[in-house]
Image (cartoon, rainbow, N blue to C red; front, side, top):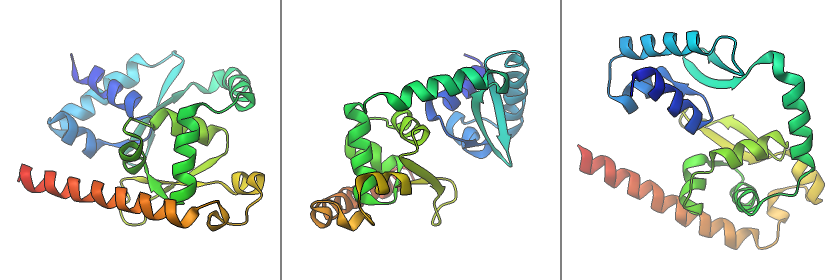
Amino acid sequence: MNIEQQIESILFFKSEPVSRKKLTDILKVGQTEIDEGIEKLKENLQNRGIVFIENDNEITLGTAPELSKLIEHLQKEELNKELSKASLETLSIVLYKNGVSRAEIDYIRGVNSSFTLRALSVRGLIEKTVDTKDSRRYIYKPSFELLSFMGVKSVEELPDWGDLNNSMQVAAKNLEDELKQEDANSN
């Protein structure tokens, strides 16, 4: 498998912007190889339904602008569908944590949540912001529209918010401890 295919697979899997530096770390190759792979990927995506998007030093895949009407139609259909079990689980975590990274959500649920997070974001139920502690990752929070729809002024008004929030903080601390232990073992 060539570097271009690997980059495309990573961008598709992550479904969020990835820095060039992160790609070098993941693929264990030099910056020149990453840059060449990205250029080939850009060329191969010309005149396709998927486009390559670059902002500052982060890259991602998106849909071609000329297909925006089609995507808008699909989004409207998606918004009218009921939420899946995975969406409800993820939304509950976002609500009760009121600021949670994808890694924490994945740890709590035990599965990759990137597609679910994208679907909730498209529906306007959650918002994604850059983490103030680590600009390389995002934090997901409930949107004002969601809180308004639920009839609460803040997440603290949610049923059993204190107990569930504490439980999720323990899970997040366990994840943090695991990651520190992995780092210590790899050094």
